[in-house]
Image (cartoon, rainbow, N blue to C red; front, side):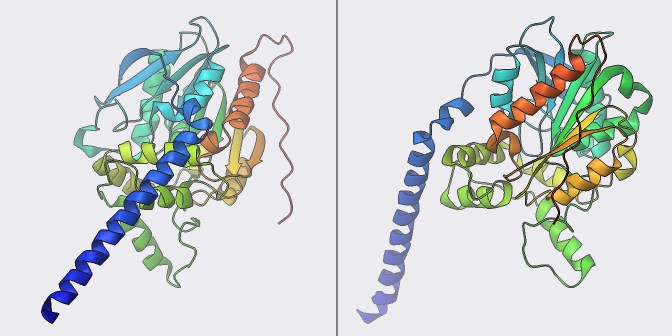
Length: 352
């Protein structure tokens, strides 16, 4: 009889743990669904779909929203996201602008890359294909990119420097960095004393194609909040972000993560020769504010640096503010002002 006690104790403990896990999962879900913002993130998007083929044959899924004859804003989402990342911005901006949003290669409804090519140069070339196919001839667009989307914009500028001013009126780079993503990340608060070891650990973590659960879990919910949002993020914001990460294909997530560990786009920044706004999150662990400060200083035509008190998912955590900033940028540089576009004055950074 005594020999059975350890087994019974283990089974009882496992059952209690599973029950507690399920209770917490249901509590998390109830909090997400009770949050008024939950409905806003899940409003259906009814865009006009378009298939665009990248120069290496990758099939890109794009959608256009809003009036066909209105000025165009192009939105590029970040790593592990998809078009619906921009739901809040699309619903607002499409009232007055022609909004084009697309799924990055390997994400959402876009196809996987041939030969698993997820180098940052490919994302720049994909943006070029989107601009050629989705922006009317002779017209310019405002382009905005979050995280990987911002890197895509700078990569595009580096590859097609002679065409940028002909196609782009202004740009917005949101919660992004152009290099040193592991060394300057705040996800792991304890730094190793050896830089090469730290790089290897970070590279292994980002490039690992580990499968994620098929639905929300208490662990994923808290991990996403810690890594990608701030402590003040609402249940709906965390839940929506968690959905996006879970939906991303593990192999694509790992391949792009590996490419990001080798990222160095600083030399390409000077080729983004259009008014460019930078948006940063004061509590962004993935691309801390020093990335934005350096980027803003390197831009040939900086149009301002806006800092928001949130984490990496700025367009989710501060949806209305990001939308307002993008609307102001587009109105300034795509409007009918007879005295020409006016660059926004850069915000003075607080002393630290």
